Length: 247
Image 1 (cartoon, one colour):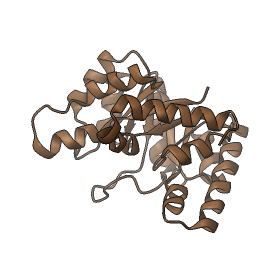
Image 2 (cartoon, rainbow, N blue to C red):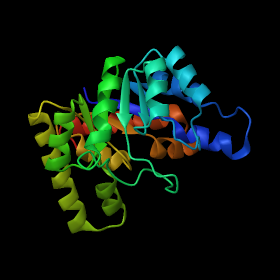
Image 3 (spheres, one colour):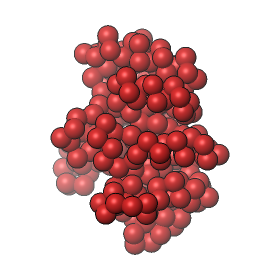
Image 4 (cartoon, rainbow, N blue to C red):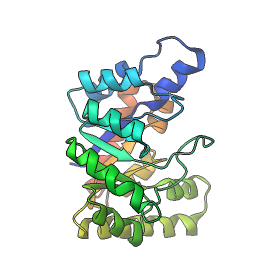
């Protein structure tokens, strides 16, 4: 079965907009698991704009499903992952001024920085994932770096679909499908994420090289209208339909 990882960052975004403890992102994580999520993703940013250190500690302590710790490849974050020992550590690009992650990690240009980061995280027992563009060079470098997983950036495709740019959307989808197969041929487990909604998740699920989708912003937005459980169950159904060839 194609796995669904639910990103809870934006529950913390709403909490932090006003301060205090509510809404609680850890409660959202437990609700997501009850609704069928196979794992939970949380991104602890350098500026703590949403998830906080205490959120990560509670998630590591309380979750009964895998925790995917999204993080920059910094000394501070690596040391925290070494202490918390999440199931997975996904290294992502991070710029303080960006509103959300804007593209894949430059694994080729940052090779020298990433070698020790990947080694330390793997030594701590984390499955190391690299969030990259779906192209041959970063995929090959990810395998060379010793990552177990690559998460292919789906944002360019999803934005093209949403904007009605048909030809670009078709080209980006072909790029993702080709990248997924290249990654699988390199022995990497292949995940996908960024901007996926019910329709795009259903479409991409038909590509069997993908093992896991990580989805957050869309699900949290839907939850405001239909509830978190209903949004996750509908996403699970869309993914299953796509995998079964009913996209």
